[in-house]
Image (tube, rainbow, N blue to C red; front, side, top):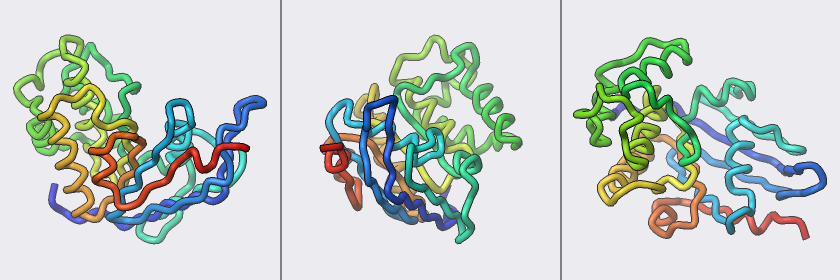
Length: 216
């Protein structure tokens, strides 16, 4: 996990998002480059998660443009998701499988062969190695959250997108996530974190408050 990651740049220009008649936010412009950690803050319901989804290509903004480049090459919107790892408490995992089986499924979905050694390394990092062959349905909420981190890191994505990253984690899990964010940054990776938690924000190199872009 020590190899340098590809250089990236994510740039958003004048984004706006509307759901029916409701304007969520407008005129959002930002950029994130390799080794930068952007913290996105805002009150509950202000649109932090919506902005993350728009930046990842999971949601088409009503107006504006998102550009994602890897090693100087701009990607099509549908290719962005293959270059990032996304972790959020509301994402689900297939609970009828074991962590190792789930890793193999995700690898197949990416059209790749699972790197078992990397999967085991990540499972050990998140204190799941001893449970690697147990069905996820028997895991606690914190353990399921740690499984999501393993899945997000399987393909050495240069961009990590984390929505409330410490949710459901105990102190050891929180420490592991802090370490992975710092390691990711040291390897040249970028990170976007939606959070209001001071501990998360202490890791960030720059911040954006969604409340600054709410409609008048």
